[in-house]
Image (cartoon, one colour):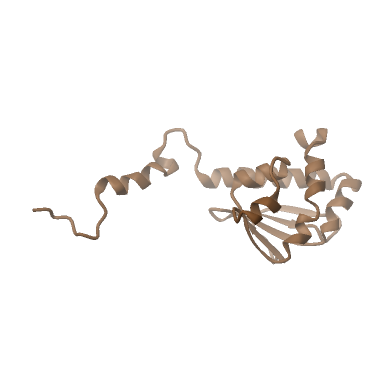
Length: 152
């Protein structure tokens, strides 16, 4: 006679979830670390281009504030509605646009490898607010990501 209740998952099924945990995989980086590193790279990208008056003026055409949520309580705050533009690791203040994506999606977008608009259409990235304002500078981001300073 089994002592397990009919609603409790079998032991093997509960361990399956443990295997997906970064702590259970030797050498794996916890998701929060990946998210934090992606946030730092994104902030560095925007700060690097904020130092160039021409690039900064182009980025500020979006005229919006954006929070990019990467999960695990990590995110990026962008102020593209002021001069100089501001980029900060963390969700700071209030933003008119809230974007939710993975660290890998953000990295690929900033590097110009993926388009945020396509990921939004496929519902792989979610948002709240007038995201078209931020998407209006997507071609500028792709162009800046291909400049020699983007690789620095």
